[in-house]
Picture 1: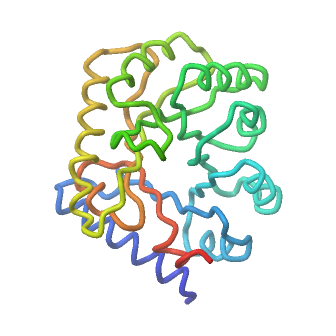
Picture 2 (picture 1 turned 120 degrees about the vertical axis):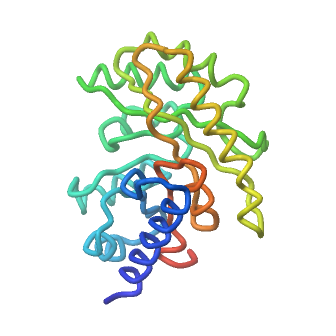
Amino acid sequence: MSKIADNLISVKERIEKAALRAARDPGEVKLVVVSKTIGVEEIREAISAGAAILGESYVQEAKEKIEEIGHQVRWHMIGHLQTNKVKQAINLFDMIYSADSINLAEEIDKRAKQSGKTISVLIQVNISQETTKSGIERDSAISLVSKIVNLTNIKVEGLMTMPPYFDDPEDTRPYFKSLRELKEEIERKGFENIYMKELSMGMSSDFEIAVEEGATIIRVGTAIFGERG
């Protein structure tokens, strides 16, 4: 068995243990294998070992891989999406994680309508308010959701965030808890056509804490493929 396959099994086992610690069904947690900068052969190894969702950050890089690998797996756009790349992204990805402004949401909606499809998105929230990260501020997220309600070809399915990096993963817990509480706050508003079923949070260094705090999607690359060069 390859190192990638071993790592993938290990990550899945850690997800299961974290879910059980939180009295959750491990089946509620989806693993997105982050394949940005990873070559096609390594990605094929991961798929053979059971990877079902791949996460990419750059439209052009993803396009080249999808043309080779195809849609035997689901592809998620997990990076910041520029408005001039939306048309391509709509036709490549099954879900877009980085909706963080009404302008971007309207562009996604317009391009999806032109393609005759409805695209699933997550609202990216900059829960830590770091200037180096994309995402809408927590206090503005509900206002953004209230505007997206009127868009017919975009389906909001939840929230995503990236907390700061800490040497001790436990320090990420308040950020994950804050995103979960925001999700619950939005649910209580009862917006039509808004589905708060997904919380995408947690990466290689902290995904177990994220699972304990309610993550339904975790994004793991390094723990599967190793450190990128």
